[in-house]
Length: 491
Image (cartoon, rainbow, N blue to C red; front, side, top):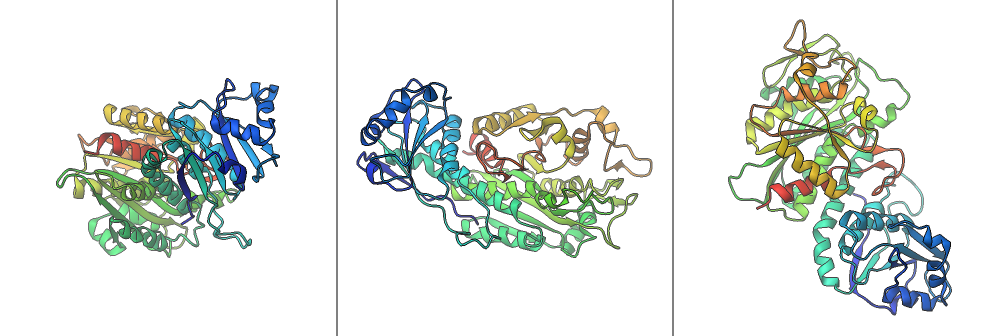
């Protein structure tokens, strides 16, 4: 996977400011107060930093902004970055500020003087999240090189390093998710995806790969119907992390893993189809969360299940009008083969309940274009049958700075799924498309089972930089779900 920025935490060393190469960053509060490191940097640069602070440019700067002095006199570094930030900035503010520094690194080493900053660990997390690139398929001389080291100087470095350790596990999970989502479909086949997940056994996860014969025996015919037009075999991968008390019901995370989506017989337009390599984004997030939980040795029981398929048109492909029977036993009339993700999730949701009887379920999927029309690329759509469970997730997402917005459910939407010849249709028409998709999934949630559906079509992969990621795959959801586990499921 892509290498994380190496982070080293050291006690404050003012002498390092003069000799550090690459970039040096110091903190100045929005009202212009300089700490010891900023004062030393100003002295070394013959007052250049103080002149910047006294200027109109600084007066117009917003908290979290970075002002740069290029090739500063008196420093070996090629840039002095002045981070405008309160020393007691909130965790999200600190992360966003760190991400700004990470975006400026450009492969160079960095020395960040954080002094007595309260949430310096979160600043480090922001740097690592943003200092990411996916260049596995480029031939440039520096492609694949590990990022240069970042050194975080702090007055209490051991405390900050300890606080940062579980956060950096989350960063590795997010990078793992991004790598999976960014991979082209000729590389990340269903088999390769399953192999990469199986490698996480080395982290202490139990990983099983269920092949097509077993899926057929289990009755996962809606899932199998999606992949039957492809030469790539459909699979379900089950990842278990057992860090909690033995016998405690796990949280189940379920991900849609359509490694490429042509739309099947209901073929998508050619323009933009190349982006459908990201249609396994839900499975990618589940994988990233499981990796983060294993790395930080979470004291919780969590199971991650992903349905891996490829939706292709062929002589064997499912046709519009076909009727298939789900693992639950309900029949589904396939109106549109491009509404395939819900067919994958339906069987995996039912399997998760039958096998694990979880304490709750969260499914994630790049499910509908309708959610992008409704919420853009700023928020995932959140649907739930359980208010306390949903509110816990929304609180976790807000705490992690990941946008999420609750959407409605209701019988009127469910009625749109009525079929003349089967128990249900797989689409309910254009009106409320993201809601009817969620209603379809809810039909496969047993009574009394707390459930959240996350439609991440708008946030899994984007065409411009976000606060924490360069354009492309974002890793959205890894941090929020990790926080949900920490808040509600760890003993």
